[in-house]
Image (cartoon, rainbow, N blue to C red; front, side, top):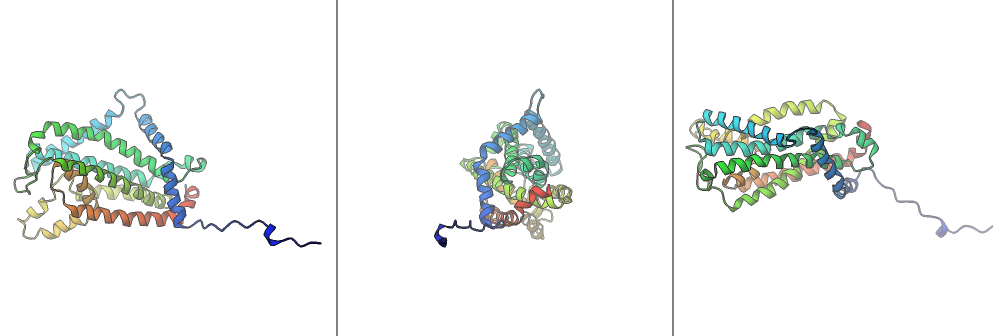
Length: 304
């Protein structure tokens, strides 16, 4: 009886580790390849939310405009500032804040809300994150209409050197630096993806995380210069011991992400340390998200 040659035997498939950064990167890459899928689903989310509404998504713009107008008028009186310069400041800050808070709060619930699709749709789990972020981008685009209207009304107050308050730093005014808001928006969206991945996976395992985040995000709003100028921290005591108060604002990462978008859109001086901190935070955040994705990506379908 002739012995079978080892060359005729089929080779065993190489062992594939389910926990590897290669698989984590592949999940993100495949999700980008499925951009037609999550892009379509994001559009459908907008249409479904405003189905049978007379003005449809314009309700997003109206709600944002009303809130920005009310807060701008209120805090301009409280801080004794000019409405023509302070209202645009609040409007842009609130538009960026709405995008951030939408990505964070919906990101914690992104996998739980898509339980049916995760169990029946053979797609990378990052697809559901991309869908959520794309939906928030569409909301942001609608809200930018409010910025355009405010800019048209107060353009003559912003197209030259001006101050937000009487003792605030002098700002150069609107110029070509407005285009720097575009990479700022891109950086925001890139961070929104890793935030949703990180908190989405953790929240799927521990269901107490979403309400904790929702409660904490309200505190972050008041700690972030959205409806108040960061320079007021140095003016509280005449600049004597305001340095530690300014440090509190600088340690808030949300402040830097708001500034990389708001400063160009309002013609403020673009402080590059905001970009450096936002960039460093992006790298650290993506590393943490990829670690979570590497270790627990396969368990999400069981946890939901």
